[in-house]
Image (cartoon, rainbow, N blue to C red):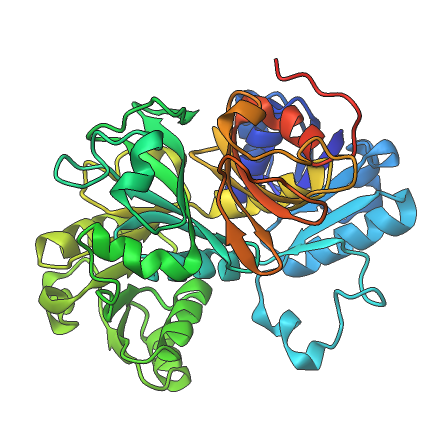
Length: 459
């Protein structure tokens, strides 16, 4: 496909890197010539300097025959106008825009992004999506990853394997014996920076990062069996009162028993946050100062979440918080280079906003009846939920490894609100919603599985 990306900042770079590596023809527009030069030097993309919403600039970037435009500049207004111009003047089929301001989603704004509104097919609100991702991780103690599927009927959870945890030295075929009565399925393992779909005989070892699916109603039981308290994260300290920090604080205020303290270095922002939040305590100060962390009650904190606009502050403050007594730390990190050092800093969970944004775009590129998608492990694999159509290659499958392509593992299906895990005797029906993990190289196979097709080759 031919894709135009408006904006060469961190988000635009992340999208361009993934799409160009997938073989798409990518053009990037930005007003900053330094950013354009940097992205064209690093990636196999075409770069254009200019205003992203200007017709001549879009035409130069190939809008006349582009299949998709992804507008992710720092300006919501530029993103909206760029999509509108692409629609009216160039009839670009798919328009995706990043919208950061919450004002555009308020009731006063009406149905701005509806059928009668702007010509935008997909609205990406990365701040809200990242905040939701943070909340999901808090709701699953001990997990470095937690994403719901099928209307939150199935949840995919990422767990670290330690030598003293029940998962160590466990194979896929033994999971039923280890967790009797749990509807659970191991999907994939990240080992030595290599992500692979698990096979029945593969054994988990210390240091593995494992992705597994589970009936969401049984998540608390899983954490208890792993020796974790499902209600641990009651005292939370948030660093930063930006859009993400405020959204997380507001969501936590609605949950009974949560005690939230927010640290903000800018006085005006701190005052604004204090006026907006109802039950949270806002502290004005530098999160990198031990005295400020102690004032926030760091020694009793169940979780510290670094959500400032500075990756370095998020990482360093989280590491300091852990040393001062915080039980769990979560840091928002945009830079892939800084993300590599989070383990050495003893930061428990890393939140990558690029993964959220890229996942929403990949969903629009995938063929077949794929309903939701999440890219994991820096694009090495994907999780997808799809609906089974008539004549689908998944029909009558039991979703066990014998009936799926190599590199693909089923995480279960939802039928009439019931969660069913892969097992001998299961027969997939039309209308079932199936959750799959697959290695990046198996994308085409999965697209075929979710399409009505008459032929399929496993190899």
